[in-house]
Length: 124
Image (cartoon, rainbow, N blue to C red; front, side, top):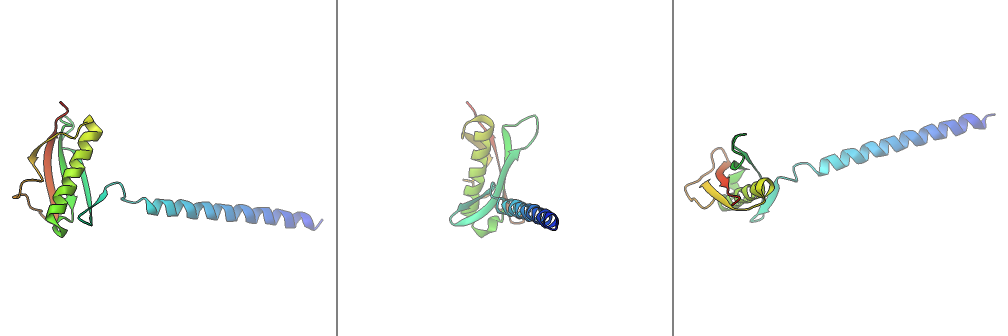
């Protein structure tokens, strides 16, 4: 009769240990995927960049934002170009862009360490 409680306590301990391992694994996977989708290395520097539509009415008109652009302005411009290209490919299936404020414009400088570019996707 004494073996029945012993077996039950081992089963309970196994369930608790399994739950702890699963929680730890879930926590680790959440940490490793953080911000990896919007960071790319240009000239050996990782920039956080993203492009998004300027308004709901005109999806083709977008703004590309690059943070920490003062690290390397030329590389930040390329990160902004890449973010814009990704946006246009995702939205329209093309990489053709008419830049309003583009990465090739030497007069474009970061404000508060953030570079802002603006363009229009040209699907045709």
